[in-house]
Image (cartoon, rainbow, N blue to C red; front, side, top):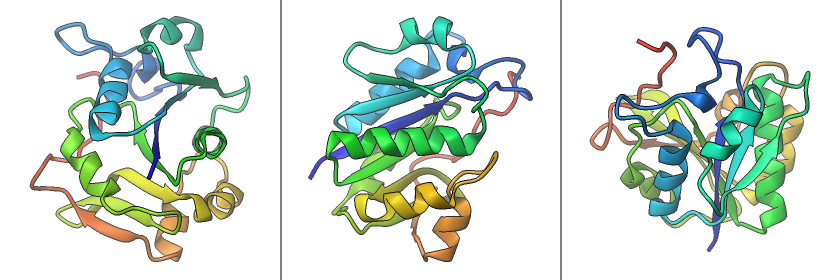
Length: 184
């Protein structure tokens, strides 16, 4: 069973003050490197990084061996990023894609492994934190065409996950589940 890890890092980061693909920890470690490392530690292969805003500056921050795909200029809404990541996962032949936004630098590999457990092409899962939806999200290969077709504008796969009864996987015992929307 191969699961492709997908790092969504194409956004402009308006609330953040710039592209989150360029963000670093206080110690100077790129969030991109952390995300790729977490997905690899969880067992994802390959790992795809979707870049958009700040792509020229961000690409050198992507660890060697990760596949970089770029959202076309003018197509920076979230739906375009998710669609491109799912397409890349499909090309890899993986049974499923595990989607992680770049703005969760504290996400532990243990949460990813929990999401991946016994996954197959029909699996559809969303991590929840004390019942609140979060990341990662796992989309089995059988769902990819329908998820891609349902994506619009600056929205991710949430509506599809709700409409199709995605399994909610509680991960609050592993991590707080919060993303970073501001640089504070």
